[in-house]
Length: 117
Image 1 (cartoon, rainbow, N blue to C red):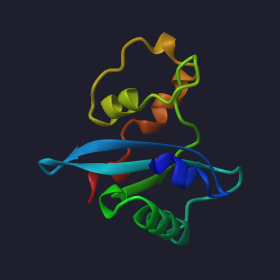
Image 2 (cartoon, one colour; image 1 turned 180 degrees about the horizontal axis):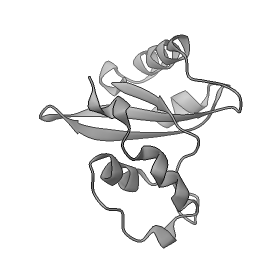
Image 3 (cartoon, rainbow, N blue to C red; image 1 turned 90 degrees about the horizontal axis):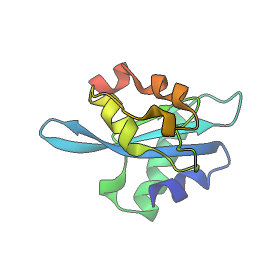
Image 4 (cartoon, rainbow, N blue to C red; image 1 turned 120 degrees about the vertical axis):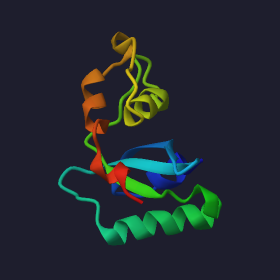
């Protein structure tokens, strides 16, 4: 649901939504891939949050929106939320041979943006 809203924006090429364990709860994290040459700005972040709040629900609004160069996918082209969730929680991702682009997993390791409110 969030993916459809976000990817309807011209500047966003791809996205991945997942939950991060945070403060005895789960917060929504949105990773976005932007068109080449673009950087995620505060204005763009506000636009994305407004769009999600208006077209989904306020509880779907991401706590963090983070730009990444690519989104990991299976060989069949499906996004791999579970692998990214494991990585951001410090767990090991098995069977990386099932990924079309396993090198993208490194983009999600040690993200300092995920260590703050």
